[in-house]
Length: 190
Image 1 (cartoon, rainbow, N blue to C red):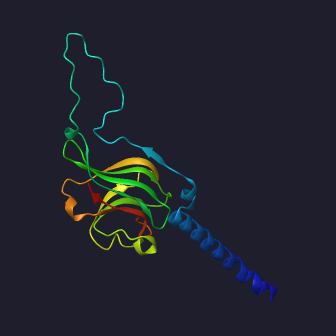
Image 2: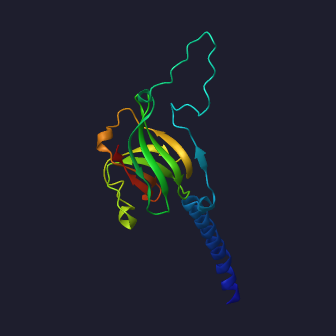
Image 3: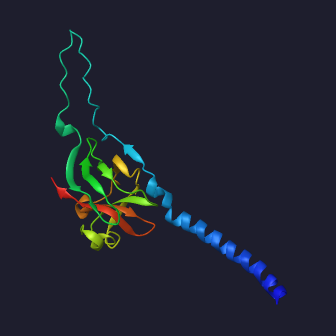
């Protein structure tokens, strides 16, 4: 009886260990739990906005130069406040037209959890509070603006030139791996 147990135990133990190590490895890859304790802060300036410093002094023989008109600088077209969905999320979202006519989605003072495969989506879905809003953003039309650069700070995401802005009404911090919104903002035209 002891001999049968020994023969079955060796290969069985090895098989169980291989499956367990493989399962732990897959779980670590899939969930990336260490990201819950890692923050990535990104502080980007809005493109086309000069740093707040004094202009250079004009030479005495030169007339003073006029500062550029605000109409030629970036213009906010819509904005909204982020609400929490799967993870606590806060900050402001702005849809901005730049002086060159291109558009960016700007996240300001973003504060959310880090996670695997986070994206910034411009969507046509309504923003719903609580669990009702977790899974609605992939049901309709959306444009992925790329990976979230950081889970904290202020950052810009360029919109494709062919995006029809009139058909989008919200922005979501979307976890593509688990198909869930970390947080979202309804865009109100200004």
